[in-house]
Length: 226
Image (cartoon, rainbow, N blue to C red; front, side, top):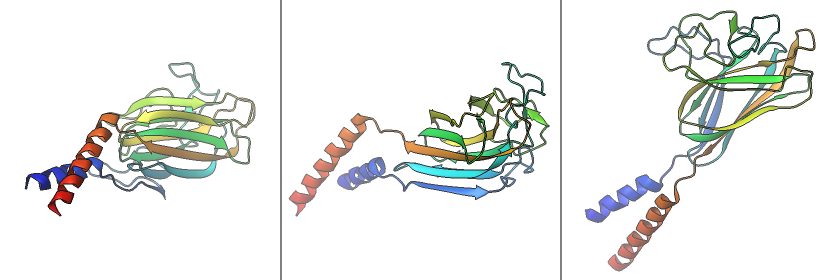
């Protein structure tokens, strides 16, 4: 019984689920306590990097001034507000803590890419025409919704560069707003390519040492039993 318990503990320690990723087009459905309104999500990404690197991609057109338009008032950090209804909004769900790389690039067009990332999801109530890219939008009231970061290659002109950031994120749900930040041309649709890479956080070496030592001990016990 003692060794069965040790074996079970070892299995729990070293066992990891398979890595997986999926993309769903369309808005996040209403969940318990939500009406399904709020942000109009264009896509949902579900990423589980438990046992290895996973990647998901999404592409389409977006407004060239969607993330920031100089005709709007400035936000708290001096960035003209973005347009809620011409930006592309995505829902991202991480099943485990992960090292993540987010990248938005032009895709055969002249997009000046920019994006903002928040922890949480806004799936209840309404929204408004504009939003803060560097803070929580004034119309968001979801508990725990928090701005994490934003990246832009703007405000133009077009350079062909991608807006990319690598960061550590804990398991949970996230919201991303994708758009253009081009002050040098008239507003138009521009194609983009968006990708998220998530890789598992390395397990501390002490845990590996414990696991390998315990595995060796169990192997010896099995050998003696035979």
